Length: 277
Image (cartoon, rainbow, N blue to C red):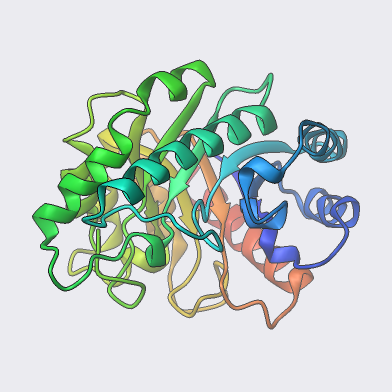
């Protein structure tokens, strides 16, 4: 398992400075929120993509992929009853897949974490079953584009404090079961799993067969080690199931500043990795 960090952790810090800090702390992966590059994937030019990739790689980091896929966009929704909006959203996912493929070019392939609760929450008249069908309609035709650009999509369960769709790993799995492309799997997030009735190691073991990506954080919205979650049994469970993907630090409360957030997070994960080796 290798350790990555999400780019929005560093706020408005110049990219060169941010990746230098990440590398100095021991990170080897860099995960990208598209809105940090531009408000629309199509507006991010080929030269911007090339330059961004060049700076990150020159620092010694691998670009993991994308998350916050639909955040800060307009006109896109995953579970809406409106067929035109679903079609537009599906086309935008194709744009995001191309962006991910460009940023991860010549690497081992990118992953796109599908969270974005505001763009997937179901309205009152949409049942969970209907929402899953609508989401499958948006995502179901993306297999060829994912294959072409060597990208995978990881469906992210989010707790009820974030929204009302795919609140558990079981629900995310039910959507995955409706998608035929092997390019889809599951993403697990410590903060989100902390809201489930089952303990985190149990959830990891239960869904290991489709686990593509992992976010490390705490229910207090900060990084690993900055709250009450013990990461040693979590890392032990990931080792037990043979997970060899990224441990990607994603925080939501930026008040401590990037140096402390990134530093304490990786120290906690490295300690847990050493204790479970």
